[in-house]
Amino acid sequence: MGDASPDLCTKRLRLYGRYYDALEGREVECYGVRWRLGALVMFSAGVVSGFLGIGGSALKVLAMDWAMALPIKVSTATSNFMIGVTAATSSAPYWTHGYNLPFLASATALGVLLGAFAGSKILPRLKSRSVRLIFTAILIILGLQMVLRGVWS
Amino acid sequence: MELEDLVVLVMWAGLVVSVALLIGGVLMTLLGPAGVADVYSPVNSSAHPLSRLLHTLPSAPSAVVVMFMGLAALLATPLIRLTLAVLEFAREGDWIYLGLTFLVLLILLISLLLLSIRV
Image (cartoon, rainbow over all chains, first blue to last red; front, side):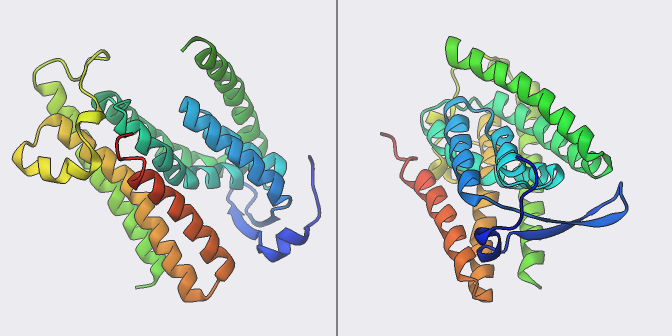
């Protein structure tokens, strides 16, 4: 959707921020716009990840990057920060109904934690364009996986 | 200690505790009798409700219970983190963000408490 100037919600909700970009060697200032559109995409992210168990994070990045016009690095990092809360919310019913297999869940969690740790170290050193390219590739793979899971499971 | 430092501490503590339990549980499974690590294992979370895990652990510290404790610690970390965020915004008198964070906490609590009851 490209750049947008700060709107009313940017001011009311104080959606201003700044981060240090190690690659560019300077502080980057940013702000979020169109929170309603962002919230709508986030709602879809919650529904989709609750249904299929995947795709929530990717849609959250889209909500912030595309709808709210935030930088891609801010979007991916914030999405990662939020995932604990959103995943915990949708995992409680899964737990009760027995969809949680202990060994698979534990081994996967350990792998994800290791990957997330490595990713958080690599992210600051990547160009925004590279992050966007990697994200697009993952989005295509996830999209295919979600269609397959939705149709055949 | 500033509340923000406490948040960082809680998140690190949650991570360390859950990783330790998960690694312990996975190792106990791999070294123990075969079966639980199988993809078709009938062992699942329905027999280990969150509310009973702490009672089960001292009496029967099996690999399965240790792994579920690790997963429960992962689930509990954002809950504690959110509670601290509510306290932080209340202290700052930031009513908009207090309301928003409280709403998120409420949804999480409803999910954990109400939906955990078997329907």
